[in-house]
Length: 412
Image (cartoon, rainbow, N blue to C red; front, side, top):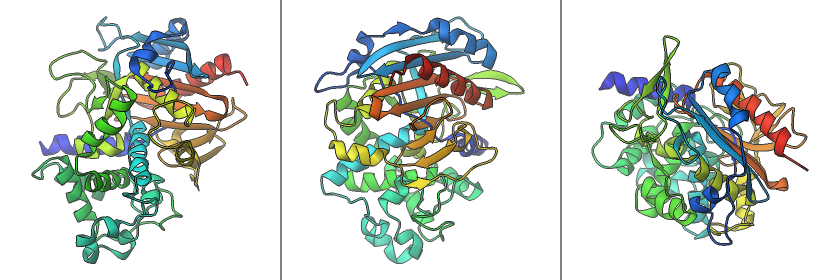
């Protein structure tokens, strides 16, 4: 058990992060539903996607392009499980990893709009019973600092991994385990200057999830289903491995072992630890991922109005420069080949060589899957890409595919 936990947590420390938002489907005035997304699939992308399978060693790949609220192109090719001919479809579930972070930020924004929290709510206000035990720096961390990775909490390291490993053995539900993480980390000194130092922190988003659980009185998962998935009609959305236990009813994630892809069934090694849910354990279908992107890129132009338009723009507005990161892990902001990187709230912003204007982006990987979402709200343009494997080759594949799709379908 312990070796499995350590393996999963260390894989997380290399892989949980994100890149861009992509949109998906015609959305009615009230609901951005999966059914709407699937009703118009646009131009087929099979021929465009096909070369990427062999060239980059992808078991499967899918993509959707959206413009002006409509799907202009979509497609999915390849296999659910390497070595088999079980074909994927545009309605198959894929894992989105750290693209989950934007969902957690949206949930926080809802509570802020309801007056239950503030952007500058401090952790000592949420946990008054722990205030005297908190390090002074930890005590003053604000929600917006957690959302922007400027809290002063560390990126994944051995100490973080050890706490997450122990959290999984604590009694109770996931909210109890996340509260335990807060209790364990509260006395520790910060490693950066809050509001100034940027460090991608899955620990920070786990703490943010715990804050939302304290505020909402339910687990993060229950809150997300009720407040995000259900209103948006995301019926395939769920948590953990995208396939069911004992079934290949979705594309399996694949690990590279001794240079070869190995399919990972649902089970203890099928995803990152569940305690990290707010940082990245969501899965959903390609077309519903597109529907989520379509709702986001609309910035209030499409229902349902889960938060006001100005709040959506606030979540998308960068507030901190991201430093250059050499040898950045696949799926992390630093792995993007961009001339200028900044971070907003659960979203990044990148200036790409093929686009004169910056793209909002995020990418997510649990080490076995990879998903990228990219948006240009000013043009109502979005694209999403998903695959069931990870690694540096996939980073290169999505850089190339993203450029090809943008140049083909984006019209100013």
